[in-house]
Image (cartoon, rainbow, N blue to C red):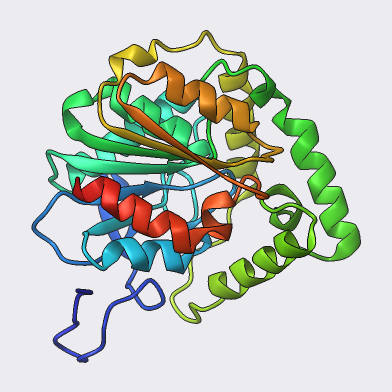
Length: 287
């Protein structure tokens, strides 16, 4: 069941979950939470240039039906203070510090895209903090083609400017009839929240995140055999940002993983197929 606000009698969903702040070494970190408390929370780590309002409400609300969900802006992102670091390792350390600042000793971690790379850092840096991992639209550090993100993103921004659309129309979804419809539906869902919206991503954050992503693509691969946590890996079969084979490689290198590749979809495959993905994710978390 979703949490009921006793003061107003309204059901808390991603559309109305209040933005809260917690201090992490003197820096205010913005976050939202919903769903039943008392179990192991699911902490969401979002994608390149994303803020809280960029999470798909159908995914958040679907998981929050039976799980305590926490989504936050990492250092320098959205309403969180400080500056975004240019190394994924530091992003992971900041995520660990945020989770511990909330007082949790065990969490499930959901990472999408860049957030999936950060989630891997969390599992490597603080293995005792993690129960299960969900890695979507992402690959392993040192994954080769990931370091070509700059030109891919630049071309998408050019196409978006010419079409007067959000770049994610071109980055997350295939330019097929079904893909275009999925993109339009996704952006309608993102617009459902009307008040208490997050601050937009800053230029500093965009540049730093892109540098961290490129550096991660060129880095020495991590020993992923050290991540023994149960892990659910998912992607679309035509991801132009993180090639789908990188997700397959990630799953092969994780000793306790399962892989789902959604057909006729791209980087945002888990959003295009949220009706299939959310029940599979909940089942994985409940196993």
